[in-house]
Length: 363
Ligand SMILES: [Zn+2]
Image (cartoon, rainbow, N blue to C red; front, side, top):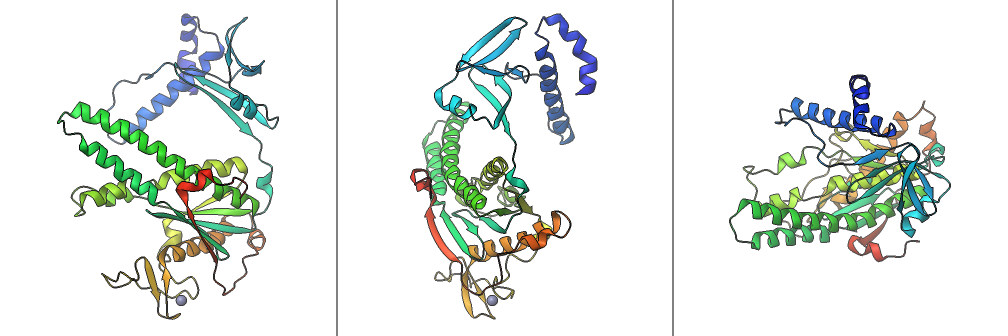
């Protein structure tokens, strides 16, 4: 960025652009160049770099005036963009700072920030999140919630069958169709996940908990053509939106001052299959055992346990320990109390994720 500024700041004078925009233009160019460098590093073919669509970005003199966003075009000349009541309502919050705006031919984005004071409070517990294809299990020793995500799987299946129903063998047309229905699928799925993540973050905030994730990596490599799996199975696994869940939780938690911690693969190595009550290694059911589908057997406790429940209990327990170790100097370990060992079963709730959006927001 600095090098680029030195090289071309003077050159930009030629274009008669208002000086406020010169630095943001250079910053955008630096972004494009760094993306290109990454592509070259990964051996991906790159064209000569260019900005794919025109946009106006500035972080200077952004102001709300009479229900409009004031955009300085040059000294003494400004443009006013009307904002709708929802946007105005959000922006009028005095705790918010308006940092920047980005204007394209079809959209206006406003960058805002907020000071988080609550982050300083010591967390009193941890809540683990286990991401599965058909459910999202969230909880700890006291309470576990299953969010039913089967609708997400169904949406992906419907999309695939719609795209498949177009029989024309034309790559361009097919690409258009799959991109259209793919976008529709992503938006519908996102909406369902929003309902869940909102609830997760809200609950963690009121209970002052750390949110613990388990790292999922290389999952797409597991389900590729030629790996010996069926087509529809691969399609199902590859449309699993596990990353979207994390993305949403992370940004919502950051906004609310809730800490999020991700367990690395080293942290969780070999413990996902351990009994949450006694630590004994659990055993999978025999192939074809329909009765104990997604369950694990503990020899010591002599009982079957739900696979997702075991996973989430392990994640929250591990995460609590790891988080305490990584944050500050030893004292935090004591701060994470309230999860005293107890033999009781956690309270288990089952929620249909696709119906959350319409649920009472105060719950
Ligand atoms: Zn056990």
